[in-house]
Amino acid sequence: MNPSYEIIEQLYRLDIDSGLVTQDQRAAQKELSELAKKSRISEEIIAKTRTDMSFNEAELRRLYKKLDDLEERKAERSARLFAAKNDDDHRSLKRELDHVEREIRDTQRKADDTESRIEHSKSLFQKAEAELSASTSASEGERKKAQEAENNSAGRLNEINKVRDSYLSRLDDRIAQHYIRVAKITRSPNGPICRVVERACGNCRIGLSPQILNNIVRGKSVEFCPNCSHVLLPNATN
Image (cartoon, rainbow, N blue to C red; front, side, top):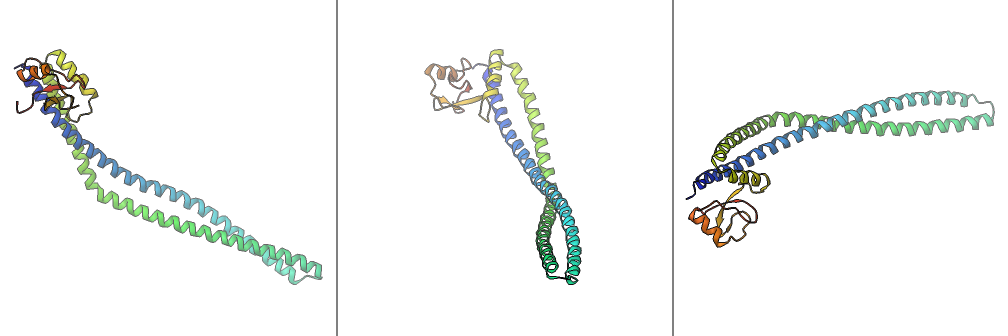
């Protein structure tokens, strides 16, 4: 049996372990991302509604000031209308008074709409603040747990990488370099090594030639899949 097979077997087991740890790490990172997203959405709503309220409150102050001015104009026109000396003056002042009263109604309608928008913004603001507070409080434990899981996974991967480097240093340089190159491009979560399954590559499932299969079974030489380049290990039952 080629002595490299024992090292490759250990690398294969390490890669499987690494794949599982990586999945745990990604799950923890995703959970952290989702928790941050929830808080970010609430914070964005709070910022937007605060801006909307400031704008609408300024607009409402302007409308209130306009209503005060219009009410003064109405009172002044009403007094002049009451004191009109002839029909022409009366008709002219009546038209002016009607115009002012229409402006008052229109401005009051705008003020009412603005008040409604402010109340709606306040409702959204209070809801978002409550959700942010609840989310922050409820998710603190989840965030801590996810962060610990992510840190543990990162630590475990670092340990695995150190052991992997140790094994690679003991391999023939040609095999080690081939392993490293395939590791960079493989999509398999189990890394660049796979077992032969039913006379085919366990990664891409392409059938293997009798010569390659014979070399693997006899342990004569380390073989690579001619299609996906994965390092081939004999089936565990062999």
